[in-house]
Length: 301
Length: 236
Image 1 (cartoon, each protein chain N blue to C red):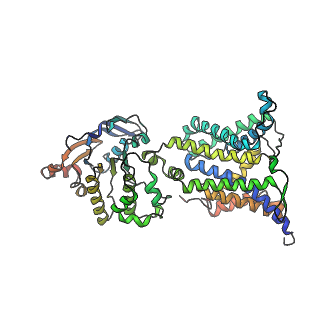
Image 2 (image 1 turned 180 degrees about the vertical axis):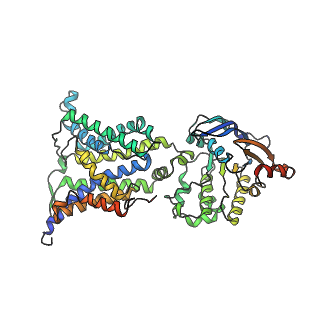
Image 3 (image 1 turned 90 degrees about the vertical axis):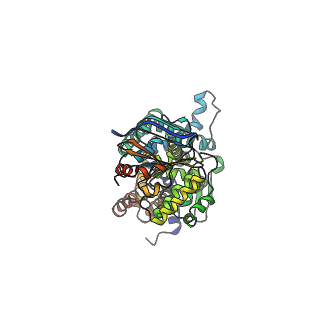
């Protein structure tokens, strides 16, 4: 393995880092939702996919639909609008359905969100087919950039910077602000927090909106990189759940570190032993379950 | 004080946990500035009474007025906003938040709350512990923090559940002095107490609860004369 040229390793590490950024954003959203709602949100992948489709629709379909062919919702507008739409739909889902399961076992929330994911994916398949749609990055982010050891598409560098900024901002929000203290307290003992005067039901709805909004942001960022298909989220979610099992659902920053770390490990495996690159995450998951069932950053209870 | 307006009026309060009927028509009242205890043996419904006042039980019926506002149909956060500070029996310190975060977490529910400096003046032990996680504090420190944080909210009515439970005598004494100081500042307090000797000199009146109802009301100056009755009711 020592005859592999360094630039090839660095190139795979970079690709791994980009994947890791998506893992990190998605698993942070899952961790937030699990903390406050006690629900493992299987709709997360569908919500990610929805945002990517909204981005694509905004650019290619919205104008013709509305009868103004020249009307386009560009990438930057989508970066704001799509997560907001996904969050709003998610908050409706929470108020109408998830809330009714709050006092039941995890399993019911899991089944419901899994069902909603299937319905959503089915609807998009019906509407847009399974063949992937492409999406060009915005003009100012097109073309390659030299990062020393390789030429990297400008847009991918942007994804790394943007998603790291999003993750760090989320951690800052949770660990350093008053709102974050409410969210952490609500994760620990929501009933008592409500007895202190906080409107916990509304806070939970907003937290769900925030969690799926993160998935939406990731979906918009993914649109120019991945094939936009109804199944893009479901495929990614398999790995995200492995990430969450390894990291433990208890910690927001743990989710970020685990997501990035596993992206990098995957990238390195592609160079060192390519045959194992698709299973390495699941091997690590099995080891984590054996050695630390609560996850690397989880709390034993 | 006898003609001060009512801070809390509880009438015919019934409360359930799931199917268990715990409170069977609790009646009592507290005037502004009064300190009142709910006494009784374990399991008679004293803690449930405090929880039911805040809407933390399952179903509840009857009437609970806070400063004249009927709260029986309100969710807990709306009741708290009327000016109620709650110190639960298990203290409820958030283990994953620092002591400082715990202290400043609660929203303001009234004017004139303590500053952090005033809390530290009352409980000097907390001064050095700000950066420690709530879960790392000693029982006494947690109790002081649980009391200190509701003082910062400006709530004029404090519901304090078993604040002396399991604590060393020196801490119990500090808490007793704090109660006296708070009373002098005009706070209205409802103490649920197991420790009658702690409570008897602090409170203006005592309500004895048994089987989910108030069975006796005893003013401070009646205690000496009704010692035998009190001992019988409390099983002392």
